[in-house]
Image (cartoon, rainbow, N blue to C red; front, top):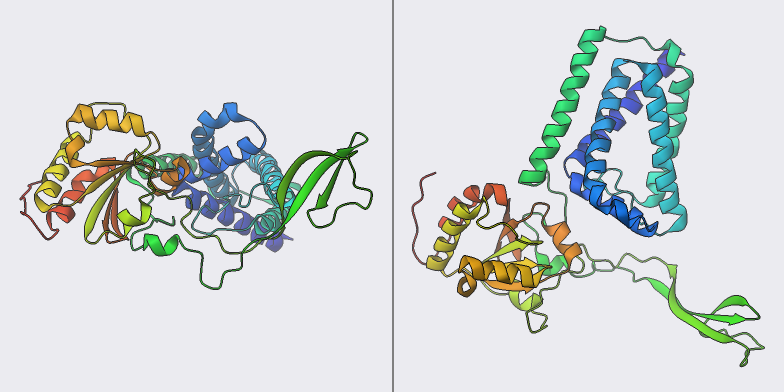
Length: 383
């Protein structure tokens, strides 16, 4: 029995720590996943708090995993873990059974799991945590109270600090579709040999106060004017795998022209400056950005502001007096959230390949890279 309890402790503790660390690498990703659940449930009032929920949940996962391994306050943490895994199992079960949420984000973008895989994982964890819950009296602390508390405080501080770092400086391990080395035009295509979704046109009519659904080529035998049309939609019969890695990335000019491929396939180097909106002027990163503007002007490297809030960013560039040096393009807000985990984020591309990416806090690190680009004049800059 003691061996089984020890094995269960290690499995649960390590899994919670690992899951927390993977999500801590990209807490914004978890917050966006929470927003997806809230939108399905029409809990839109919580959208502004999802990042706080995400950070706290990640810290708790890591700290709870450490506490289980240490055997510290098992009565308290066995209850907390049981409540947490019941909550997770509900989320993954809902995602799996309803089909309204395709992934739960349990291990972030680095280890994508289907809803079914996540649900199975949580069911196994639920069994293990229930076992630990009823065997909690058999678990003895590995260290003294003072040592255990010191380790837990350190784990808490490090968890918060690491998340703060990646929110400012971008994820340490980039698992997103826009990672450096990505050929964007290629990733916007469906995988070779992919199977498209299989759908059937479904009609929704009402007769005698009851709603009736049937396929577009299988009308009821008694179909007549007594049937009142309600709706029609494409019903998914079989999910394919034809979804490209980069979705909904379109670059639209002020005139409404789709210029995505023209920009991506433009030969040579280019810079993308992703931003949701720009309010502050001058921003804290303006000095580094001004040097970058000077460099690319000398080297004739184009710079594109990519935003979901076109009017705001255009007004900002006018206020900064750089309208003639940059192009402002509209893009889907969801695509920007995936491409730029910090607001704003700078990309360096060659043709359609992403070479480097920097958050607003690291524009100084971009200077040597941009300064070394061929063409024009090399501008010496001492850090």
